[in-house]
Image 1 (tube, rainbow, N blue to C red):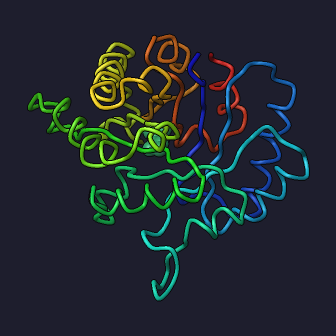
Image 2: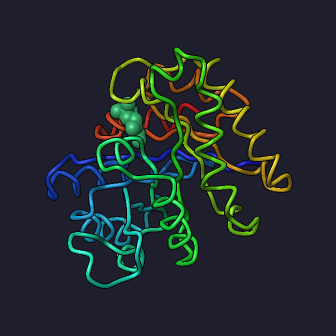
Image 3: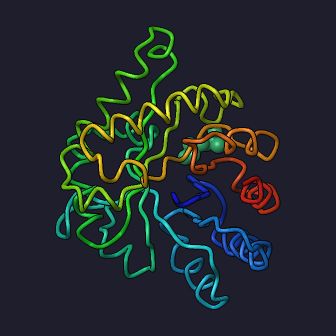
Length: 252
Ligand code: 13P
């Protein structure tokens, strides 16, 4: 049985106080849930300590993740945050390769390979994002683009390392646009991603969680999650509202 995961990516939103409140609300609303969905929240770096303490104090089932990490272990890298620092802050996961980081901060597959290796060697799990832009889908290049994102980074891992990877398919045209991929479009790509993974890591492909991200909300989550190869969601905007986020978690 593959794990079901719903992860909230808060991006650069909320004050620290708002973040603490949101974490408290999410913890409270999920504390009595008895489904087997793994719940992850991903606040900004500055919030991790306080949010981590909220989760620890409540012995919460909600787990903590970071939105990014440095591509070096330590040293003269002004403005960067290392994986070990994130681990100390009780993060269990790190989002890597989000399209916003690829597009606005020039992250390449080469940089992502360094980061993913650091995350895995620290014993944390990467949530590795892939996805095509609108023009790539319109040119019918979406499968090719996603395959190359997987091949240039994930194919370079050893099987035992790859076993800890969570993949998130986030079509760039669906992020923050209100335009969701249809559940069939999501399923088609998720099934394809699983086949590409199977070509290299046959033994792990069935167990790899593949999350959908892009305008996922309470009104469409159940339909998207009903698809065989969709194992959960990476939620942006809707994860900033505890009630909406928990409704999405309950959509499984
Ligand atoms: P939205 O849910 O706001 O479209 O964002 C998706 C996303 O980028 C999650 O990482």
